[in-house]
Structure formats: structure tokens, C-alpha cells
Amino acid sequence: MTRLYWMVPALIGILISAAGPAHAGPPGSTRVPASAVALDAEALKAHVYRLASEEFAGRRGAGSEKTVAYILDHFQKHGLKPGFEKTYVQEVIQGTTGKVIGKNLAAMVEGSDPVLSREWIILSAHWDHLGHNAASGKTYAGADDNASGVAMLLEAAAWFARPENRPKRSILFVAFDLEEFGLFGSRYFAAHMPFGEPDLKLFVTADMIGRSMAGICREWVFVIGTERLPESRNWLKQASLGRTIKAGLLGTDLVGVRSDYGPFMTRKVPYLFFSTGECKEYHTSEDRPETLDYAKLHQISELIGTIVKTAATAPEIPAWSKEAVAATEELGVIAAVLEEMKLPESGLKLGGYQLNMVEKTLVSIRKLLLQNKISDSDRRGVIRAAQFLMFTAL
Ligand SMILES: [Zn+2]
Image (cartoon, rainbow, N blue to C red):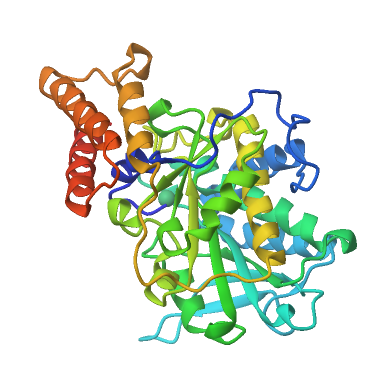
């Protein structure tokens, strides 16, 4: 995740509870429909521990080649084909110098349908992080950011690679480099795709999916981008059935560009971004594997896998919606987050001014929810207040 306005979105992310009440149950609860993508919880955890270990040196510099080898080994072991004609590796070249500055990695599963297989879905996560800081002697392991997303990517790719799980549309699994450095890897990829841009129907990415924003919002994963693909809200609702987590829909306007969806958003490719938001360990050497909630990571990974499966088999993936359609649940989700911020266990220690603002915002949300239609300016007012609270309190 790139630094910027994440807190804000998180709040907002909560915006939408696509899922309705999640049925509490142990990870892998039997209430999840049989059609859902089922991933191995232990394998997910093992990937995070490995990728965030000393050996990988923060997945930059000395640790880069190790990381590349680890991901390629996984793709090959599970029989995934190279994503760039004969190779899994796309060298990222700096335009001005011609220097190779990074490596995007991609593997594919070809769709089974003679017509739909010409259409592509990308599932992605960035593999790079901040490396080792020689001055401080600290290694930035990046367990949540973004070993968690890579773990999801690797296990989802292995699932789709099994013959019985072959999708109708084709799927490209991409691990981007240089996300932490201005999204350079995904920007390069988007300008040099292995298929024609019109054939890319959906871009999905996950960045930081193993924690909970500010230690609150434990049951939420934020989903950004549904405003350009409103149909995806139905997919999310279905994929959330029986899960212990809820999908909190956020409008991208609240968050800005925080991860690799940026270059695809610019190209008007429908996108979905999944994240659990920032914690105090974000971009510190304390982002370590023992701080993750692995049951949550497991649930979110299966949710994402199931969304991709749904999209890959749907009769049609709707094109980019010209109008950004705000989710109706959005304000309710913001209200839920504000309520959580007030709880003593949030550890946020809101001052009098902030508490007052929380209460005022909750009152206006309640009023708005009684109306039939919420205007853009009403919505913006709530968003601005929520943003202010996120910036100052988290
Ligand atoms: Zn980051």
C-alpha cells in the first residue's frame, strides 16, 4: 500500500455492508456455500511467515530475487502457464535510462469457453515491500503489506489451476513489483499488457488483508471500486454468505489511489480493491507475521477467490459505469465505524471536539437514512466529516 489517505477510506470503506449479518462460525465454517472457492488456511499462513522472514529481507534489494524465485516456484509447481508468452517475468524498464528496475510476475489459467476465454480477469497483489534500512539496521518485513495479499494470490492461483476448477474466462495472476515506489510496476504492466486492453474485463487487487483498521473494525474488509461495477455488489453479497467477515464498500473518491488499481482506473477498466486498512504498524519494522489475524486472512482470501470465480463464469461482466454509483449501504457502514471509534477498546482516545463531531455526524446519518434519496452533496458532507475524523483520530 502506498502512503497517503488510507485512513479516510477505511472509514468509508466500511460504508457498505454488502454482506448483511455474517454468521459467526469457525474459519472454514460449513455455512459457506459449496460453490465458494475453498483455500487452505495453513498454506496462507505459511506463505506470510515465509515471505516476511529474515531470509526475504523485506522483499527489496537482497530479498528481491528470493521472492521472485519463491513465487515462480509456486506457479510452476501448480502447473500454471507463463503469463507473458514464454515467460513468467516481465522486466520493468525505466523509460529514461532503459535500466531494468523491477520484475512483475504473472501466470495464467486459460478459460474453457471458446468465446469467453478471449476475455481476461486479472487477480493481483504487489510482492515488493520496503527492504532493509542500513542506517537503522531494521528490516521491514511487510507481513500485512503485502505478504498477506501475495498469500491469497498464490493459493487462489493454485485453486484455479486445478482442472476441475477451470474458469470460463481466462485469468491472469499477477504479482506486481514496485508498488511501494509510485505503483511503478503496475503502471508499467498496464502500458505493456500481454493481451489487448479491451479484452481486460476486470482488475482485482488485494493490499493488506490480514489486520483490522486501527485495531477496530475487526469484522470488516473494505472493498473499493464497486461504484464503477455495481453488479459486483451482488457478487459480494453472495460470496459473503456464511462468512465471519463483512464487505464494507467504499467509494474511491474517499480514498484516492492507494494501490495498484490506479493505472487500471485511469484506463476505465472495472476494478475491485480489497484491504483491511492501516494499523499503527503500517510501514514500520513492526509489520510482522505474528500480528496478523489468520482466520480473517483466510476468510477474505476465499471471498476474493469466490468473487473472481463468479466473474469468470458470469454470462457478462458489465463495462465500466460512466456514472459512479454510490452504494446505498455506504452511510450505514460509516455509522457503524463511528460507533466503533467511540468504544473504549478502540484505544483511540477521542478528544471532546472529535467526540462531538462523531455524535453530530451520526445524527445527520440517521436523518439521511430516513430519506428516500440521499443527494450527492448530503453524501459529501458525511464523507468529509468521516475523513476529518479518520485523519485526526487514527
Ligand atoms: Zn505499503
